[in-house]
Structure formats: structure tokens, C-alpha cells
Amino acid sequence: MPGPILVHAILSSLLVLLALPLILRRVPPNPLYGLRVPATYKDDQVWYDANAASGRDFVIFGVCMTLLTIVLPVAGVRDMAFEIAWSLAAGAGAICVVVLGWTRANRMFRERQGRGR
Image (cartoon, rainbow, N blue to C red; front, side, top):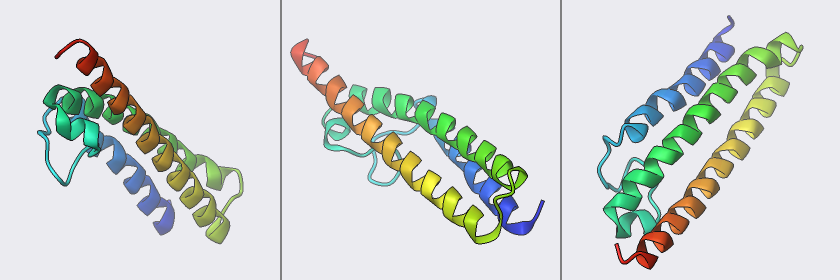
């Protein structure tokens, strides 16, 4: 496996590893790690629920990116085209996961407010 492809495979796999503590609800509210949006800071239960769900999304994203790292060179996409395709997929995927997580956290917060906590 050439160097750049190995680096991308490691980065993609790192997404999966970083998501595991979120899924396991091991990360308390903090300013550095996790889904940090207003709704998650307002309610600890929303923090843990939204981060667990976003962690699962990041696992799926990381697995997809790892597969993309393998499939692109097999399909003949190499060098700069590989870098561009991988970067576009990574950027689009990250935006999707964040927007999904943010909207989910807002919905969770509204639901908890409606139940009176």
C-alpha cells in the first residue's frame, strides 16, 4: 500500500476509533470533544444521547471513508485525483454528520423540554 493511501486509511480508521468513547457515553460535556452545539450544552441527557448517536454516524462515515480509500485506487483513481476525490468525500461526509447531529440534538432537546424533563 503506497504511503498516501496508508495515511488516508489510518485517518479514516481514526474516525471509527474516536467515535467509540462517544457511543459508549464516556465523554462528559466539554469544549473540545464531541458534538458541541447549544442543545447539548443545555442538557446533560441530550449531550450523551446526541453524542452516542453522532458517534454511530461517525463509525459509518469512517468505515465508508476506509472503503473509499481502498476502492478508489482499485478503480484507477490515483495521485491528485485520489486526493481530490477523498478530500471532497471527507468534507461532504463531515458536513452531513455534523448537520445530522445538530438537528438531532435540537430535536432531542425540544422533546425533553416538552416532557418537562
